[in-house]
Amino acid sequence: MTGAVTSRDGTAIGYRRLGQGPGVVVLHGAFESSESHRELAEALADAFTVTLPDRRGRGLSGPFGDHPGVQQEVEDLDALLSESGARRVVGISSGAIVCLHAALALPALEKAVIFEPPLVLPRGAAALVARCDRELAEGRTAAALVTAMKASRMGPAVFDFAPRCLLEALAGAMLRGEERGAGPDAMTVRKLAPTLRFDFALALATDGQLERFEAIRAALLLLGGSRSPAFLKASLDGLHEILPAARRAVLPGLGHGALGNANRGGKPARAAEALRRFLG
Image (cartoon, rainbow, N blue to C red; front, side, top):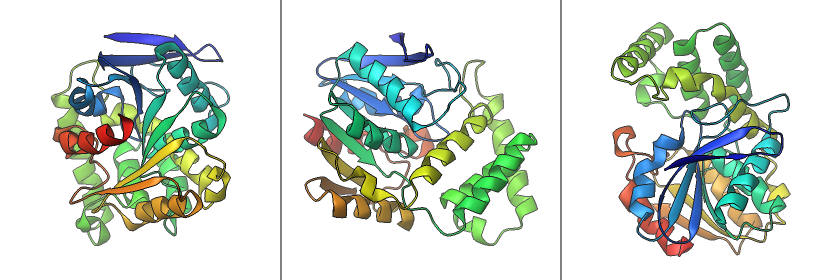
């Protein structure tokens, strides 16, 4: 089923929902939408009622509004928790940053899975983010995609030595290929690209400021993949140092896309096993 809640500023936050049992809200990351973790929700649906919202600017939800930022997204999550009665959340990448701030502000949030939030950024990331913003403003989506992959260290090894013109050509071909096979309502990478600057802004606003989360009292699972970039592992390790009561777990052989759908390289069934043990 699909539905929507109204956030504090009047913006509609749309969601998809499936399953039965205690409520869980899954907040997706950058270049993602509510559809990106459908298979994870299906793997949990026998034990949980899973709500998959579209974060602002995507799919079923309204725009960012005049004051975009983490407070706005915490208010969106608060509306989702109030409507669903859920007390558990799963935050993925930039969505995990929102969940950490929500764990400070929302007493209703009792358990949170924090999957690889970018809290300790690699050197040079700020300059690449600024370049990505310029390329998006100029309508150069393929160039912005390459820059984003470099900033997030998510690209394959070829990104380190291939000429940029070749990388942009390959990114452009990927965008066109995805659009040829996509329906009119599909959240393609080109449609999601304008939201990237807001996800990067969340990461830059918390870069190197882990101590702000010391006051969290909700139960946390700090989850990552063994094949994820080093800066994401450092973010989780840093959180664990200031929150020693939190659980720390690693998904062997998996990377940053572990919780996503299989067609994006995810292993949702394996990830669901770790989530089920903690959330149950």
